[in-house]
Every structure is written in structure tokens, then in C-alpha cells.
Amino acid sequence: MTTAGGFVLRFGLFGTGHWAAETHAAAIDAHPRATLAGVWGRNPERAGALAARHGVPVFPDVDALIDACDAIAVALPPDVQADIAFRAATAGRHLLLDKPLALSLADADRVVAAAQQSGVASVVFFTQRFHPNITGFLAATAAAGGWQHARGTQFASIFQPGNPYGGSRWRHEKGALWDIGPHALSLVLPVLGRVTRVAAMDGPSGLVHLLLTHDGGATSTLSLTLDAPPAAVTRDFVFFGENGVEVVPPGDGSALTAYGTAIDQLLEEIDSGTRDHRCDVRFGREVAAVLTAAEVARAQHRTVDV
Image (cartoon, rainbow, N blue to C red; front, side):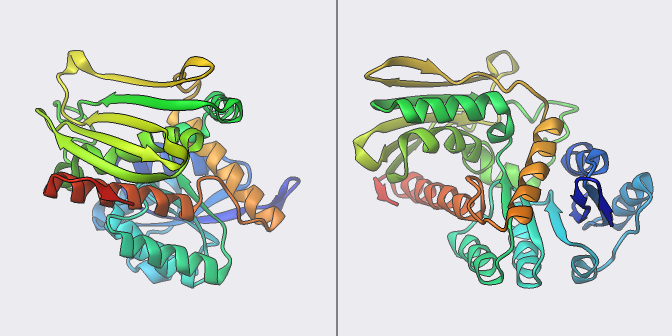
């Protein structure tokens, strides 16, 4: 099917939770060049309900939905996502994935290799990187140069009653390092460059503190938790350098509008034939490498090279 703007991308949606329903499915349904081809989920009842809500079929089999779509959208635990992404890329389907790309570097490498071999387009949805004002800020800050250090603090409180993410098993097991660590890194890496060394230390309430060395010698510190006291919830990212101090602004849109932008950019990659998106699976793999090193640094109480 085509529209005045071009062909319509048929998405297979993998996942049935709050994020899948209220962000992924809603944004795909609202996009003029995207449509839902069907839904697959680990809970057949919820998959059926979400599929019925959008008037599309529910698929009991992963590969059957991959066969029925042009691209996949995934809102599942990262280890489950990595396997589905590998199968979809191998089948020539484009990838709109969530962060983190995977929970192991080996799984991330498998996805990257499959995407590169098949030539599919890929975008990993680091939410803040799809707000136009943040994209502009990071580009201008990186171009200014001269940055010596960044400090990031992101305290969430998802385990309170009624929070839609509080029951997530993988978030309980992997904590802030793997859940909001990717968001933090997605803001720091474009300005300071690739991480070369990592040190880490735990604190109370699920806190993890990272000290990072970047290419060229700049450093950054990140403090992250999913279990902060509700009154202490905050997000604060600051760069320090020769030109003074720059504070990363809050995003100027919702997660829903940001996901619509991610769909736009995936379509641009497909339309143009380019495969150089700033948040593609290669960037997802770079983030996973830092998180993997940080996990080792925490466990072994030492500095780890990335």
C-alpha cells in the first residue's frame, strides 16, 4: 500500500505491556506511513486484547508475524528482543527496537551482524534522542567542543503502587544500570565520545554510580536508580568545559511524539537506502558494551577497559 508520501510500512508489534500499547502501538496507528500488521506477545490473552483494540490479527508464532510484516517494533525484555531482532533481520525485516539492545554483548553482536549482512535499516529508541530540542542541543554542544566532564543524575521511582513498570521482572533483576543507564549514555556519548574505561560503585536504594573515561581524556559521572524516594525523583545532565557549563534541557514532547519521530527516521533510512542512523543497532551495541563493562566493574570492584 502507498500514500502520497510513499509506501506504508507494515509493522509487526512484539509486546503487549503498557509501553507496547500506549507508545508503540498508538504511535504506529497514528502515523500516516505506518500500519500494524499484527501483534505477538508472551501472554496470549493480552496479545489478543491489544490486537482487537487495533483491529489486527494476533499471531501465535514469532516467525509468522515476521513473515507478515516489513519491519518489527519490539517492547519486550532485552534478552527476548535480541532473539526476535536477530530472526527478523536475518529475514530482511527492518528494525525499530527498544533500549537496551540486548543484555549481553554476544547477543548485541548477533543482532548487529544480522542487520549488516541483510542490509536492513535499524533504529533503537533511546527516547530522549528523538526530541528535537535535545537533538539540537547535543549537536550544538558537540560542535562547540572543549568539554572536559559531564555529570548525570537520573533518579526514578518505578516500584510505587500503580506504576506500570514496577512489575517488570528484568528491571528488578538488572536495575537502573540496564534500564535508565542507556538513556544516560545516549546523552553523554554524542558529546564526549566513546567510553574507554569504566569504574562503578553501588549505593543505597538500588543506586549505581559510574565513572567513565572517554576518548580524548574527558570524564563523566552517572548516578542512577529506579528506586528513589518519590520526593527525590530527578533528571539532571550537565557538561563542563572551556566554554562554561551547559545543561541538557528536558524533552519538549511526549514519548508518543518521540516514537513517531523514530518511525519517521526509520522510513528516511529505508527511503534513502542509507544505513548510518545515529541511534542504529551499532550504537545500541556500543551502549551495551559500556553496560557490560560496568557490570563487571561493580562485581569485581575494579576499573574495566571497554
